[in-house]
Length: 146
Image (cartoon, rainbow, N blue to C red; front, top):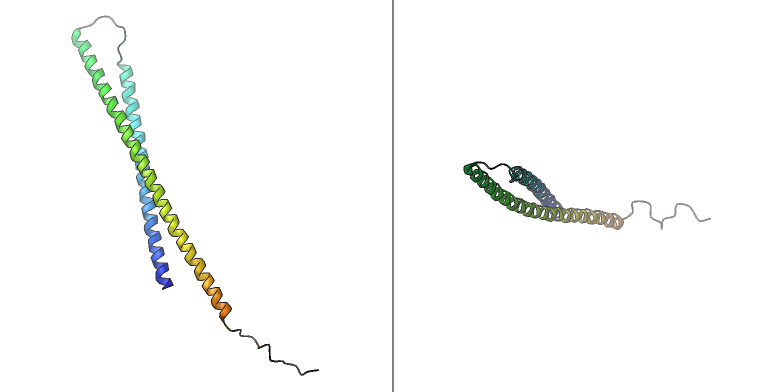
């Protein structure tokens, strides 16, 4: 039975380790998504600032309309990018929480394995203590009485 239990604990530990590795990889991907979305948002912000209205001599109305339309589209893109950053951060937070849960599960299994090992050692020690001694009996006297 202990071998069966040990095999089950070892299998459970392998599964939990695999789950931990997968959640850590997912957390890394989520953090990369956050970084990418932030870079995109920063780039859009730079573009918005680059096309901001500046005092210039009057030009054709169509050019002004084109710039206004472009600024409007950039502002919409900026708002969308901010939303994507927020969603990516939420996903990263969830991935981090899943990683913590997986680590907690793996640690619990490792503690169970350690307890089983300690229990097996204690059982072996008790078995050794309960064994009859193999040496000469104390009641036998090798020497003649003086």
